[in-house]
Image 1 (tube, rainbow, N blue to C red):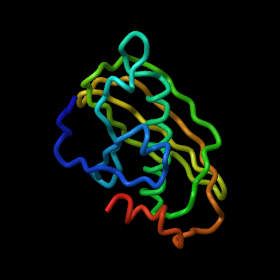
Image 2 (image 1 turned 60 degrees about the vertical axis):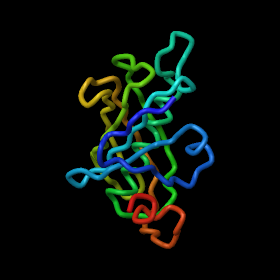
Image 3 (image 1 turned 45 degrees about the horizontal axis):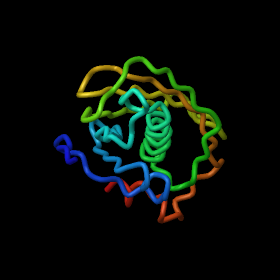
Length: 152
């Protein structure tokens, strides 16, 4: 089954076998924010034919982390400390699901983030918040994680 991808979105090149297996995920930069999204396919659904919560949580974790790397312009591996997800509404096969992340606060070793996930350009289906561990110093030496290469 093939679906159109909204204008301006491009395939991500996240260097993760898990992301590759569960994707494809797409991205675009809008007003300085990294948006990520995907089209719900049958393989992303639960027994009720709705978007599986595990896939939505996967997307939220990748959205938060990727947007954080992009917005902080860093190339370091940023481990997830905690992610909280609120499921608000369902999504179905064929729906376009996308998110946008806000960096709420950056401390010396942690960053607090928040994202909203919508379907079909506006219907809120979930919100997520995350805490991530960052290094005290920027590490722009890791080409595999360089946001300028993953999200050119």
